[in-house]
Amino acid sequence: MRHNNLNTAQSLLAHIALKTARLKLFGADILVKQWTASERIKYMTLITDTKEDGGDDLTLIRPQAHVVALSLVNEKGKPLFAVEWQDNKPIFADPDGVESLVQNRAQESSDAFVEVAKFNGVEFASEDDEENPEESAAKN
Image 1 (cartoon, rainbow, N blue to C red):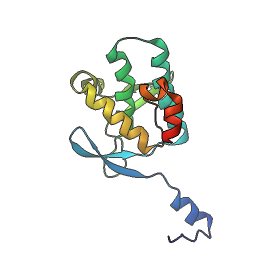
Image 2: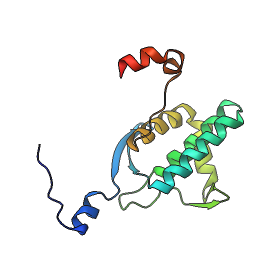
Image 3: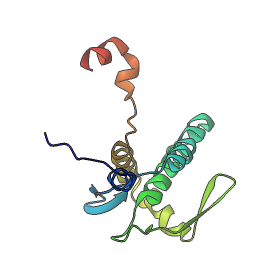
Image 4: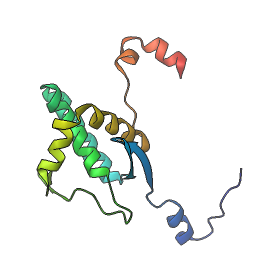
């Protein structure tokens, strides 16, 4: 395996710059950005706050769809869905577009969330893992 020589601060920073990847989401190849540290905290807070509140399936899927929408970018790295944050909640410029991910493509939005989270180094335990932790540990 070949290692890069990172002899300057500029070469190090260029090497560790945020990345993008094309993921197969919603039946198409879509560009997804790597999250910054602060985005990771915000996005995971959206998910965990909803789990604690309970609610129906759409209430649980909505924050996942929001995280997906926040992660999608165009070729220049610009977000596909413009957003502003108010009180740690995303306010989308096109709320109907984002809501259609929930209403029309709920399962695909949930699947997309899993893929986007994996790309960003976040993996969630399945219900099977929680039921039998010894078996899960043996697999790992």
